[in-house]
Every structure is written in structure tokens, then in C-alpha cells.
Length: 637
Image 1 (cartoon, rainbow, N blue to C red):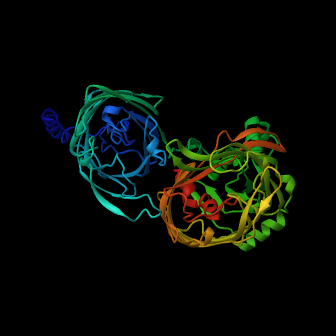
Image 2 (cartoon, rainbow, N blue to C red):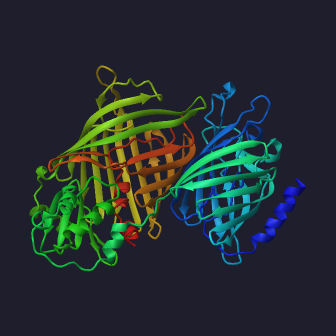
């Protein structure tokens, strides 16, 4: 103990010296940038996402350390730099062996936030505060610390990151896991646990070699630990540590930047103006196979040579910027400088590329002129089949951590008129450990959807049929959204009932579920952040409100939310990601592809129907967020 504190004092002196050096973040046991047990104040680049796993041996078990339940521990985690100085971490701790008396729980769920309030400079270390959310029950990796880190160049390719910090012995948590995460709090003393985590002073050193690996040494407030790690392919890290000199801990993590600069956009901005060639699309310029291959990805493509404008529709990419920028080069020789993406045949807005992306709305008169000059023709669309994985899940019990239903949907759309499509398909069940639904091949959600642009700022979506989440009926969404403005608002209503397909036949109940929700949203354009406040009546006559924070990060969208209704209070996260590989096989008239996105939401509290709703093909506000001018501009920088 005394030796550890002497080392810690020496580290404190070193922290105030040296030069700022950027190194790759090494993850600690709970998935935060750190060493083995201790966190650091390292500043992760905005949009950096990490996922990983750690094994904690039994002699140093943080939760399962009593003689009656002694066990090594498995910790899985995700970590995201959701803002330039702010990280969100979610981790799950479970015993490695089966403990019968704990089968009724899922595991030790925990959410932490880290804020770097001081950035590293020549004579100043970076400093951060890390706090665990108080919503958990009997959490073990609770982190309430202030930490400082300084990077010191040792040699040309060797850097040392020195960290010191102090952890509070007190925390706030809930007594019971009820339906209200904002109730039944208590003050806890972590020192009541045998292997309490991060109580008192701690510190350590990370010696990094050419950003490819390094060695670690730390005092974790109880033990001296040493270890090493290696970084492979710039993203995969494998690590091992010797705890207290007698037991081995191992782990791995994978890190990926979500905010990656678009290379094609960069090359487009830097390119010189090409020589003007006056030929129609699809002929001599089309003589180049690469150009023709690119144009084949698009549907309902029409050129307005007078306005130097192109109208087009693309269903391959979740991020419309990719579809837009890929079209710039093939059409540049046509002097096309204005791009109008369509959704179900309806123009969204106008975009021009130069040194920046210029966005402008389309008036009612301009929309009427487009409809007159470009009559709807369903032959302009491919027979497009898409594969959509469906993962319906909730965290369950320790013997089955995730209760899930997994299906594969083969879906398509029939274009009936401008804005009106029939969504249909076939559902192939893969597994069901969630409910008693039979594993029978059945129709996928089948419904009509009419998308309307009333003018440049007012949009509607009207749906009728069999929706997702076993609800059928009617749904209407309205949104006022200027795609150059920060503010938007909308309302959604629906009347639905329960349905499902047994092995033989079709079962349904009466239309008895009224949904009525209004919202207002504000967008922070610099970071593509949207805050939305909504409220009204959800399914099961549950009334209340919800606040969402969305961050668009290139091809990915992540969100955090909190909901309070008469059924309870909960919170959670959601995300939407593209599904590879995209195009699988394609001809002029036929295409097979993966669906453009996978969207999923997790709520902390289960089983109380808090703020429950169903899903139609798309949520109108989520669709329009993708076409906001700032979202496209921020990718074009």
C-alpha cells in the first residue's frame, strides 16, 4: 500500500511536465480510455466508437467476490465520443459461471459519462470528470472520479502517458428495479464491498511504442497491476494484465471513427472544372463503363437541361449524401450543378455543389410544374427486392441475457402513383426466444404509404395496412420542416389493433389503440444534433412525454432518450446504421440488395409498456433529418 502511494506521488510530479502527444486510447476494464482498471483523461476524437470485452479473474472480482458466489466476471461494453469532449459508456457485467439464485436478472447494467473539461497543452495535462448514472441497482463498476493525464515524448517513437486521479467512495443508486428509474434512491459507500472499485487515489503509466502497442503499470487504489497491449490494423486492440502479481486479466476492443471524411467529396472540391462535352446522358460519356454502372444505381432519373438540374431517386444508400456525391462526377460534363433527390417520386429539395453545399426549398408552383413536365411512370423504377434483418429484443435474464426474435424479410415496393407505394414482402423466421409466435413463413408487414410534399416546408405521410410490431390500421404523420432551418414541429396519429399470423390463418383484434403525439425539435447545425421534445398518448392508453437527443455521424445516427408516462419512467438509446453490402445483383430492370438501414432502440425498463409505439416504413422526422442542408454540408467539408 505504502509503495503504491509513493509511486503515485512521483507520477503526480511528472503529470505537470512534458508536451501534449496524441496517442491511441487504450480501454480499461469498463470500456473507457484507460489502462487496466483505471481510466485516463485522454481526449477521444469526436465520433469515435469502441466495442469490446474484458475478463476479470475471480480473486479480483468486483461484484461476485463472496464465498457463496465467487466467480470470475465477463464485462462487455460500448463507448462513444458523442461530442468533442463528451463520451457515453454502457457496460454489462456478468459472472462467468452460472449462479442459480441470480437467474432472474440480466446482469449489472451501467451507464457512465465522461467530460474532458481541460484539454492537454504544453504544460497542462488534460483533465476529466467521470460519473456513473444513478439509475442502476447495486452496480459494481461505479466510477465517480476526477483524473488527469499528460503525454510525454520519451524517444522518437516512444511516448508515455502518465495518469493520476482520485475516486469518491460514495455513490447514488436505486434500491429496487421498479418501473421508475427516478425513484427510490439511496446513498451508498463502495467501501462496503471487498473489492471496491476506484476509491481514493490512483495512477499509472502507459508507454506506447509507435502507436502499435505498449506496456502498462498502475496503482488502482488497491493493487499494483501491470500489462501490455497490441493494436492491429489500427483498430483492433488485444490486451492482457497481471493483477496483483498473481491473476491474469484479458480483453479486446475494436474502435472505428464514425465521422470519416468523404474522399469522393474531397476530390470533387479539389478537382478542376472538366472540359465541357455536349452529349446526352447514356451515350458517349456513357460509353465509359464506370459511368454507366453508376447511373444504373439510380431510378427515375431526368435531366432539366435548361435549369442544369437533375431529378433522381436512389434506394441503395441510407445516407443521401453518398447517392448525391456519386452522381456529381458522371453528370459534371453535362453542366449539371443542381441535384433534386426524389422520395417515392416526390422532390425533396434542391442542392448545389461548389465550395459548399447550397440547399433551397421547392415551392408549390415548382412542384406542380415538375409534375406537369415529368408525368409519373412506374416503368422508371426497378423491380427492387431488399433483404431486411429484423431483430426484436429485450435484455432478459442471466441464463439468457438477450430475449430476441430474429427474422429475415424479403421486401419490395410497388409504385402505384407519385408518392404512393405498396410495401409488401415475405417474412422468414430464424429464431424466437421472445414470445410464443410460431416459426412459420408469413407475409411481411404489408401496407400502402402516400408521401406528400405540400410545399417546400410541409410534408405528410399517410399509411394503411399491416404495420410492424404486430399492429394494423391507419397512421398519419405531418411535419413542418424547412430543410435550411433549425426548428421543426409535427404531429402523428394512428388508430390500430393487434394482429398476428398463427401457423394457419390470420388473427386480429378490433381497432382500439389510439396514438396521438405532437413534437417540436431544434437542430444544432454545427454538430448535426437534434433535440426533440414530444408528448401525447402512446399505445395502451399510456400518456406522457419524451425527450430525444439525436446525433448524425456520417452514415450512422445515434440517439439518447428519456420517457416519463403514467406507466413509469425510463430511458435508453437508439441507433440507425447502414446494412452491407448494399447492391447484391442488378440489371436495368431488376435488383437485389440489402436494406438501406437497420434501426433499433433499447429501453432500460422492460415489461411496463412505457411509451410504447409501433413502426411504419419510416418516421417522417427521421427521413427529413437525412436531407437537412447542414447534414450534407458537414459531410462536404
